[in-house]
Amino acid sequence: MSDEPRETDSGQSSEHPGSLWGTRFDGGMAPEMVSLNRSLSVDSRLWREDVRGSKAWAQALRRADVLNPNELSSIITGLEGVAHRIEREGFGAAEEEDIHTVVERMLLEEIGSLGGKLHTGRSRNDQSATGVRLFGMAACDRIREHLLTLCRALHELALRGLHLPMPGYTHLQQAQPIRAAHWALSHLFAFLRDIDRIEVAKDAAGVLPLGSGAVAGCPFPIDREALKDELGFRQVSPNSIDAVADRDWICDLLYTGAMVGVHMSRLSEDLVLFSSLEFGFVRLSDGFSTGSSLMPQKRNPDVAELARGKSGRLNGNLVTLLTLLKGLPTGYNRDLQEDKEALFDTCDTLEVTVPALAGAIKTAQFVPGKIESVMDSQLFATDLADYLVNKGVPFRETHEIVGRLVRLAEQSESPLNELSLDDMRREHEAFEEDVAEVFDWERSTEVRDTIGGTSLKAIQEQLEEVRARLAGSEKGKG
Ligand code: ARG
Image (cartoon, rainbow, N blue to C red; front, top):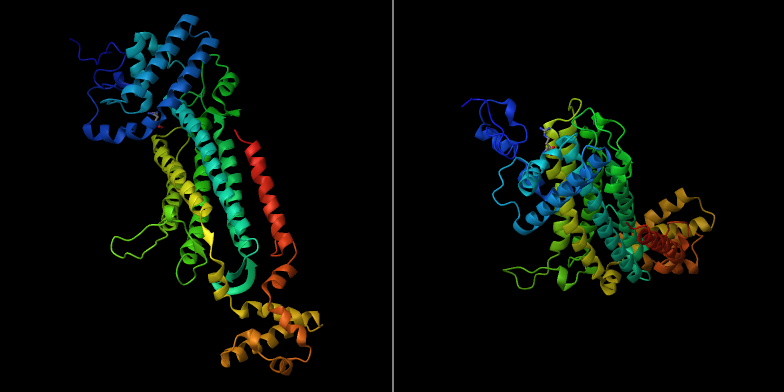
């Protein structure tokens, strides 16, 4: 018997059982290398995409006259058999290195050596890049839906806070009166930008690598435009080297995920604070609150803490991928196999976290009495300065005058709105009886009537902008 490695019946190497490339090697792969080399536990979830891409490739080979009609139909039937088998039995004790190898082995088991024609002109480099993009495009659609649900929930929350005053904060110190709707909308607009981002990521994913081979393209007359249409891509990749090495779209998706994480964590931080006894502005529903195993009274905002916590891994995944890509030489490098864990983790994290946060927001209630009880009359200090401005006093002076009044109020342990007219007139004679009207949240919010401001009209315009945008996104679906 020759000591040359032999082809087995399935066309795979006997020295490298289950591999697609073993015949040029003497001896098998070292066990330590086998473990490092394997990606099946991660990429097995791409089996549907792999089968779908393979069916489209078989059609392309037929159109290029590489397969005859009978061969095409056997391969398609075989791939369908593979799909049924995976659906029924999973992967069993598959020992292959990746999902592409498993699907090919199963195809050979279904239809015999004819299955070996499927890989003509194709490499796992363009094959895996295609499968992961198919996954990515569908994931972008799902994530976009979840973000829309979150935006709708924030829109409803804003409506519940339309006529509700609340302190607006800077430095987490009470600053100026706002409507609670304004606060809810501030978070909503951030998530609308994330919807733009996920659409950009989906477009970036929609470039077809299949037909690029390992690096140098395909020697058979494959109609890549037809392949693109069949697989639902937007565009054919224009350069075969770039096609097998480009993971920019994953960076776009992971960046979007990181931004969603940042926005979720900022909203969550507000919810944690606002649902505390000290603030008490918001009450999360029972369904989104958790208790303590020790302290019977506890009502914890775990949904918000978990959303805040999950943002860490979303940031981490982006950094993982950027670091992975930096400094890679031209063409496909095996490093690129590591793209999937970060991608899957970001998609999975978003798909669990965004709906939970949306549910918490949808069922959250403002607590008007509590908000009202903490609104300090110093919130109107700027309005007081503006009052004098309207009497012709330069703002710089009015700022100083009101600063002194605030100090006086603090020294006499009196709320700002309870200083006497005489106290005020000692600082400036332009103060008159009507100064009392300044200490009114509705007046204060109404005068801020420029675009993006706090007046009812300005808020209603924001709500309308959001409503139109969400309705348009519904229509633009798919
Ligand atoms: N599993 C690999 C990946 O996900 C594809 C295999 C390409 N392997 C190779 N030796 N060129 O990137």
